[in-house]
Image (tube, rainbow, N blue to C red; front, top):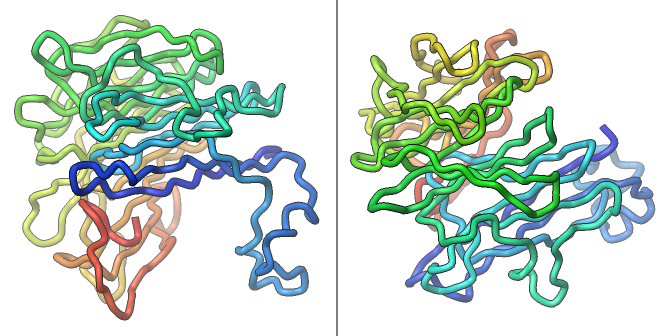
Length: 367
């Protein structure tokens, strides 16, 4: 692919009353016809005659596209950055610039392939880079974004409190990268939406109920502004009991997959997935994700474990982090694909000699 994109996120801890000094920069690494000499001039670890150091090679340029003092997202990683080869790179993130978080919003920036530049950059203060997505303050957390591959429109999910309750709210850009959005509000009583778009342009949303925050529901927006009644996605398998869901949709078919983890298991914590082959209209029974074949540990999934995706051949993939049951380390990252043989492959294992500090809220070292 002509353009290689890597997003580097520097996560911060929000402590001591959301310390105003703790701010996070969003950095994007862009490979855009960068010459080798220019790319390696500031990388002394790279040696052209030493292939073992090839992983230290950094190609392209690193640019700061925004900042925030608020980045709390429950559960596993949401999709924040998407490359549209036709138009540009869409980036969104949770944003606040006050110690009281009274200005919480989704922030947005766009790299235009035609102009080779970001649309909203403040070189004097990266906290001002980007633009607000919603016209009002958002509640607590929001989850992810996706691209309509047919129209090129970018869709962003958020939480919004109105009429005494909380609901999922979507923003869709009117012109790719233009910074103008239209909005639709989902059903009242559901929060923490994660979204995915399938080939038929349906926007699939996995969320939890506001009342208990422990049951996982599915709703669909199709056409724009029309939502289906949320359905409970878990039975007969256990509910997550914590917002740790994720969702993926194929771009070459109408397949959808929702994943979650049962956060109150005794012993090894299990993970589950459920698949629809017709754009969320009908669902197969939920299945337990098998544990990876770890050696020397009893692998346990966690609330930040799961990220699902479909590839260009319509195969389902799940990347998952596990740790030894009941402890923080050793920790591992695994890749599961039912079309592969074997289905599980190890990506990374982290096993430190000593552990002198906590790793953070609902996190393990290998996530």
